[in-house]
Length: 187
Length: 223
Image (cartoon, rainbow over all chains, first blue to last red; front, side, top):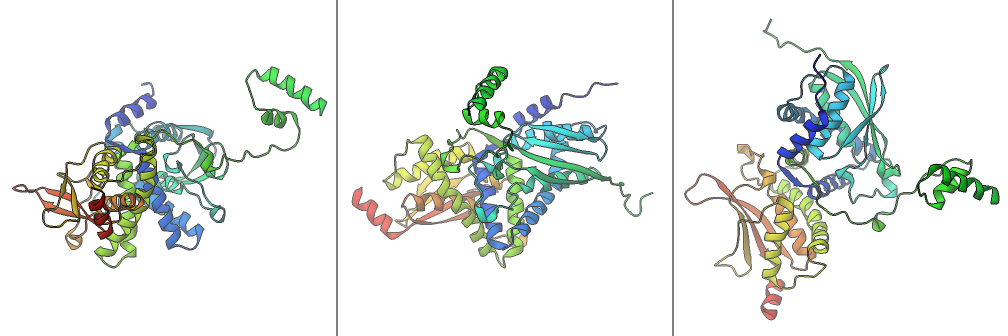
């Protein structure tokens, strides 16, 4: 039985090789996008949904780049998926380390704890937008990316630094494994 | 109160690590844990600004934003305006940050120094390279151009379809420059254009800066 590849090392290596850009430009751009969404939609819940949808679209395409660059072998189970997302995925795109906690095999679900989050540097959410899930785009990205590898998941924030917690935590629950659809005409 | 103190002292001995008095009191008392109020944003230290994210993360985000804006606008000019407005807010904030970090809060007062600041320092921080060319227009007194021989790193992955051929996503960068100039009291109209390089098929990106008349008048006075 081959030993499990060292995901942390793979993540570091890929992040070293990709082209990088100033994180603050990224942070400020995201902030401008959220501000624009808040201006366009009156309702904060609608903004949350919109962020998640944008993240979903990103995730659909992000998974291809992820697989192409990281060359990670097929995950053996959902727990493996969690490790890959946290050690390779987050490292490769955002340069941050995420940790997997609260692995529950029954549902199955896991939590990703983010100590640092480049999206929220410099950000403070004012009183009237307290129900805004600022980093909701990340939930969408995970949902979209996993859907392209035949997993239907539900992803939401349970702890948020912007709301006063000490770290951000995303809970990812596997709802169903999707069947690969054979295109019509092929047999 | 005394009993609380003695319990707190023994807790400190047991934990072995330094904790603030507030945390000790929270440990010693049996009431509910008080949620820690986060430090208000203006009291937090400014980060060093050395962190990086992958270019693809930014490109994905940028492309999503453009697609979202496409659904909301009717023509190319509006889209470019939206991108430019987005960049404007960023530029204003970047000026503060960069001035604080790089120049110890010294303000630029001369026009040409300001432009050099943008094309060298700001470009270096945003795109890890300096702008290829900064030139003054020969026929107009108030126009300057910052050119990039290849497309900017953030627009590298954007290909515009034929029906949007007039669109230039570098309007985003133009917005950043406009925000910086405005916040530094050098009001200008900034726009982005693509022009073919002489003799080559590649397009170069030109950020055209047209200063307001009062800025030019001021710089002529102080020159």
